[in-house]
Amino acid sequence: MSETKTRKFYSKEFKVRTVKLVLEGQRPLTAVARDLEIDPTSIRSWKRQYLKDQEDAFPGKGYLKPADQEVRDLKKRIVDLEEENEILKKAMSIFSKQSK
Image (cartoon, rainbow, N blue to C red; front, side, top):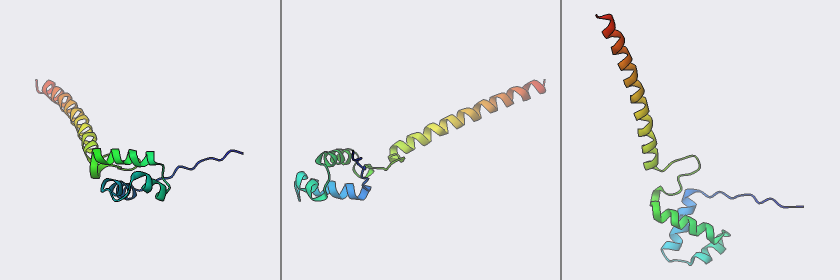
């Protein structure tokens, strides 16, 4: 009989608190991992993400970092404006033919 491992999910706040314990030097990474029963590799990964993005780290499943969300919104806005521009060009063409 094989056991299936269930994947644990940790909140952003939990990850940040855990990483800060390690970064502030209060406890060694291995001790924190052992006490929290988390693989040290996970904490190392969280630490890397936190050092790279600070408070924007760990946006959550399905969410983007604020900067990435802004880029996505701007790209969508560009597409919308290009479509509106094409509609206006077509309307101008139709109206200019009618006025002749």
